[in-house]
Image (cartoon, rainbow, N blue to C red):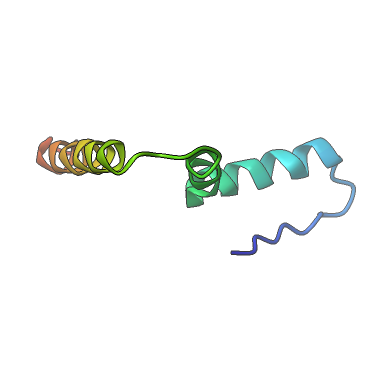
Length: 65
């Protein structure tokens, strides 16, 4: 998965890096990197997926304003 960020004219490097980090966070790339940084037991993986599933169900049930 490749992410491209073009540097705009007269844009400081820090601002460009901030945009890159924001894109990576929104795409879930940083979460995947952290998740693969260590071994996860299959039982922990199942528990995590169940928690994520329940979280998305709860978010879908909350009334949107």
